[in-house]
Image (cartoon, rainbow, N blue to C red; front, side, top):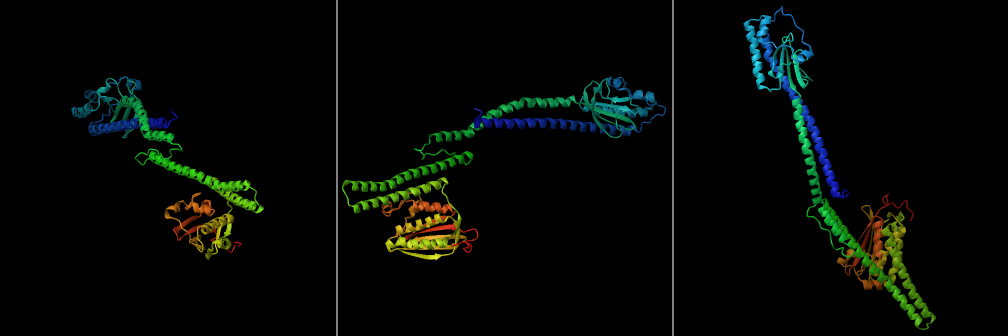
Length: 509
């Protein structure tokens, strides 16, 4: 099951979703942690600034007594246990012998701070020490405990994480000036609880999301691949006997739709190839059967009764003609088969095409002489192409021989070779029977003949034009035909020039 595309897609989809959720959870956890710490630090800083702004202006009005000796701060253990006694405004007044006006000013400070702390979170810890490091104010949440931190900077705020009075981690903001030390702290456990809640949510939601992604991925993969299953079932049912059947194509032009369309095009090409093979088999059998039947008849006739030497000689000559015809068909079939397999040998070299056409012009006059056909060489530009001289000769000879066969007596055949647009254009024009327009697209097929009965009378096998097309294509050229019934046909071959532009000066004739 896990080798199927559906399972692989589901697993990949689940893996991607899981990795995405995991990455999102990690990023969310750490970004939330950083944001909470940042916001806490900002809140602590603002609280320290507010306390300093409240205390400092009014503390300047409270006179400092010269006879007051500074007292050392309590040791950390004693401070953590709450050993230092918090002094009220009345204690400060008794100790420093302040006036009632000074005590009233101090009470106003502590009252304002107290009212402010009532509006703040209950777990926020505030402590103010005087310049002698005695506690002069602390929030009710501290109880009997107190805050202590030794390295307090002057006129700047320092943020640190330390152990609180009860051993818990706290975030502390501290500053001092010439009048007081200010401490504001908040338990980090509050942040950890929020992060723990976030982690618990992810711990519950991620497995649920993974299960949903597995089910959703399986459903989506099944839905997406359902057309593939239909294509597979239909493809199993298609054989050589029902190639006219096509695969179902979805209505949308997606990947599966294009795949089905491509398969249907391939099936149509296969059907066309199968039809051509069937037709080829029938035509080849018929072409080979005709000369074999003639040879059998000649042999049987010669064996029925005693013949004269001349009669035997005529019978053998007829059999030899049919043997040569069979040999020609077999040679042509072998050449086309090799071309299909890419095994036909084509040797490329510079070829003087004008000299080759001059030779074939002389040969064509001899071929056309029995039918009194007039052959004209209308134009013969000096042109060099890169090709196989033997194959090019075979190409032109096939076209000329075809023109001679289908041109009635006293007709005309015109040969042309001209250079234009960087190519050599060879045309063979005749005044023969012509080709119907609906048949032109088939004349290069093997064993195809427009007039089958007449072609056999003329000795044609229906392979000449197929061979001509292969030779042209092997030379990277094109072959076209223009024809009109009872007026004649013109075959035009276009071949690329030799790389030096078709200059004949460096090529021997």
